[in-house]
Structure formats: structure tokens, C-alpha cells
Image 1 (cartoon, one colour):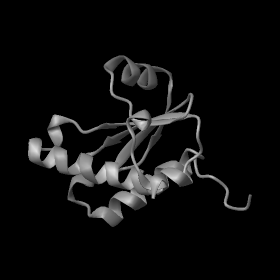
Image 2 (image 1 turned 45 degrees about the vertical axis):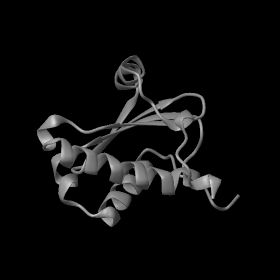
Image 3 (image 1 turned 120 degrees about the vertical axis):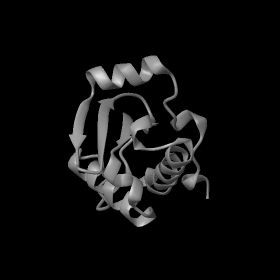
Image 4 (image 1 turned 60 degrees about the horizontal axis):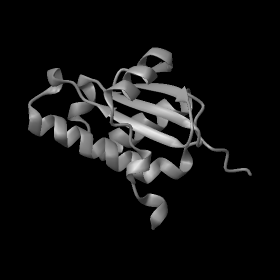
Length: 118
């Protein structure tokens, strides 16, 4: 079960780390979300949900859903990247399946999915 955890070592929290990834990273765009990808050590993710998406209750719900999707899919993603997942307005109305599809599409587009062939 440890593989499905979301430890602090997998989180980007400081503003300077977010700014570094925003400036140096490559953006992958979809109508529902944006994923910024930067080569780094380990696998770390930051979640960004702007105030334009709704009040605190809505934003916290979106972040909880995003964290859950990352937690479940972390083992499928290549290590050695810093990611920032930015929610767009269309994502707010989605269910967990929608979040998973969006995240998997973003990772696929950014070539972050681990080959299961070996």
C-alpha cells in the first residue's frame, strides 16, 4: 500500500520552486488543465487552483481530487520530474474519472508514462 501514499517528499510547496518550474519547465496544454514539466530529482508535484475557479470550498475540493488522482497514478509516472498541475475552469465540474482521464492525457502528452513492457 505504500506505493499509493503521497508523502511530503513528493510535494512542491514553496513559491520559489513553483516559479522555477513555471519559468524553466515545458507546458502541456489541454482544455481542462495545464501541466508544467521540468527535469529534476525524484518525482514532485505542485497543485495550482486559482481563485477564479470558485470559493475556498470549491478550490479545496478540486485540490483533493487532484491529489487523489496523483496518489493513485504516481507509480505509472517516470521519476526525475517536477510537475505543476494547474486546473482550468472546465475541470471544476468533473468527477474523479474525469480528473484521472485529464491527468493521464497530460502525462501521455508530456511522455511521462512508464513503459510497462519492461
